[in-house]
Image (tube, rainbow over the protein chains, first blue to last red):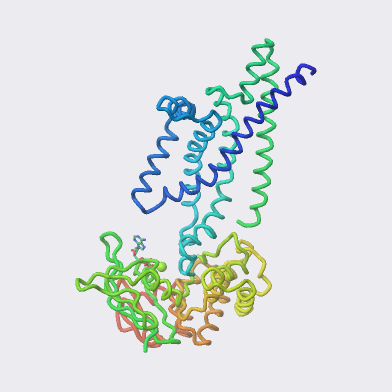
Amino acid sequence: MEYILSLLPTMLGGTVVTLKLFAFTLVMALPIGVVFAIARLSSLRFLNYFMQFYIWVFRGTPLLLQLLFIYYGLGIVGIKIDRFTAAVLSFVLNYSAYLAEIYRAGIQSIDRGQSEAADVLGLTRFQTMTRIILPQMFKRVLPPISNEVINLIKDTALVYAIGMSELLRVAKTASVRDFSFIPFFTAALFYLLMIGLVQQFFKWLEAKYDYYR
Amino acid sequence: MYILQALDIHKSFKKTEVLKGITLQLAKGEVLAIIGPSGSGKSTLLRCLNRLETIDSGVIEIDGEIMVRNDPKGRAVYSSEKDIARIRRKMGMVFQNFNLFPHKSVLENLMLAPMLVQRLDAVQAKERALVLLEKVGLSDKVNNYPFELSGGQQQRVAIARALAMNPDIMCFDEPTSALDPELTGEVLNVMKDLAADKMTMIVVTHEIGFAREVADRVIFMDDGLIVEQGTAEDVLLNPQHERTKTFLSTVLMAR
Ligand SMILES: Nc1ncnc2c1ncn2[C@@H]1O[C@H](COP(=O)(O)OP(=O)(O)O)[C@@H](O)[C@H]1O
Ligand SMILES: [Mg+2]
């Protein structure tokens, strides 16, 4: 017990890094994904194809590769960014692609009659999207979105590869140093706690959206 | 003086021609019923009139304003988006499946478009909505959500929602076809009230009784063409064409 307590300061430090990356990624990727989904559904050929290509690339290669490419690869061509920025950038680019596909499926699942009804009432396409389609879409995509958010928490561990001291790396360092499995065990508890909170939050959101069917 | 004129409307989906030259006129205050077998192009015609579908050739004029006309080569050319938006606002549309906004309450369904499109403030929009809900007999459902209503009630809300934009013409596409038989009456009654108020209406329907009672004129469509038209009495009681007779007997048999 005392040992676990002695681990806490560094573990908490690692958790802060993890949570910061998590929060930055979500705050940007959640809305960017919506924009990408709409672009992906655009009747403008160029935009549509560009988004298909983008989504193909970012879902088709490992996030770890994207992370290494952005941090080390850009460094090689002389663009220097700090570790955290590189991590946020690659996570946002990657998660926006996944979220865009979820949103796209959500938008397409809304009955065409909804936009037709809005259309004959005189709403603009923008109003129809923001007032009619997107609100209904969000309710439908909550379950897949919560999956992605949980994945994101676990994916943050990847940034150990560019030398960031997030939770898992801190645990590994302590484990090797003290020759103990307890740091890993503690890290697991931290992850479970964070994911438990995320699950509760989505439960609450789903209940909040339960006022209509 | 016609409030709506459609001349020689042609419309194809891919290679199949669905409207093969439809011409119709509608006088202010007139109730026009369109009947015909399924697949004959009735919905497509309505959808073309308020540009949910675009036509290939023909002319559509509403309240003296041209929405679409032919170029010298006989291809449809639409007016500017701005003009079309204004022209379309004169038409209300009621769908077979209601298409209420499920995430909005009954009141919000009625207030949305007047506020967003006509820039009414919330007080005015609410006032208008409450009057209309009273008119369709749903004053007690103001704060309910669509899923809490019966099909008949939902369709009455949909009618009120269309009326909230003060249209000059109301289009109905089989408004009772998705309803249980015992619920059609309440919707048809609302429509009868509208007709009595001299609303100009185009109603695609299989309700022959309703057409006979309410319609000033009936059009029978088959295979993308108007086969027969005239007063409700002429078309429904004294049909001249074989196809009309056959259709009427099958519809009446089904009752
Ligand atoms: N969006 C569409 N794409 C392709 N074919 C369509 C479409 N809408 C209607 N059709 C076809 O057009 C014909 C007329 O359909 P519709 O206007 O719905 O007839 P009705 O309302 O009289 O039953 C049908 O053969 C139908 O399959
Ligand atoms: Mg139809």
